[in-house]
Image (cartoon, rainbow, N blue to C red; front, top):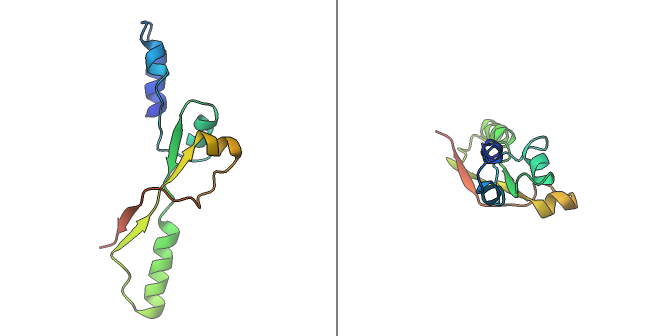
Length: 106
């Protein structure tokens, strides 16, 4: 959506076009072939990667099956910010934590 907003502002013919295009655009699609590319190209100032839950959910299921212990209802996962400085330095590792949110099992 952010890239779509940038395109819409680029199509403006009024004097305000530069004002809108100079704003820092932030994304939420930090995949290597999308958001990270747009950060590298300067189209976005930053983006966020939300690591997938699948692996962790399967691990929790296996732990429950093996031990019989009820797994936590809430489990925190941390999105990872991908900033221009990190992309330019080549540091796009998912080891850096951001703001956590929870995954609920019912």
